[in-house]
Length: 127
Image (cartoon, rainbow, N blue to C red; front, side):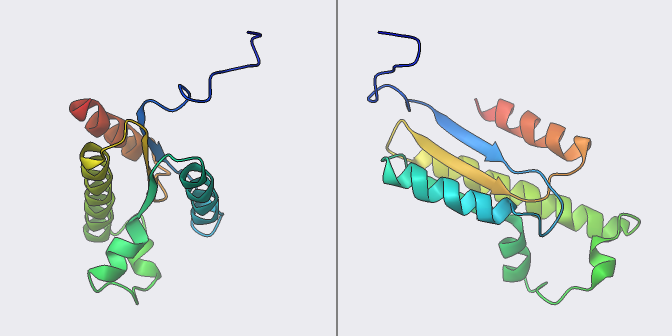
């Protein structure tokens, strides 16, 4: 077998969380949807966990720009809480998945180093 060949039955045997990173409206959700379509097509259950959807679900759909201001500490704490809640949902979904191959996509901005470290730390606590 050459280095460019693989056994298609052994490619996806692990559970994975993909954390999207980028500013709002830069294509994270679009790319996430493309990954979901492809991975589900090849038989690996994949699901998006979107922090914005959690925010809207919690009644914060019409928030103004002040909510996203880095100087607004109260809103910053709420954004962090929503992102971690979204991550917890992804972890729980993966743990409950019956297949060895499962992918959860954390669709949030995750633009700060501190947030990314928090995400990595939280995942490492579980695995």
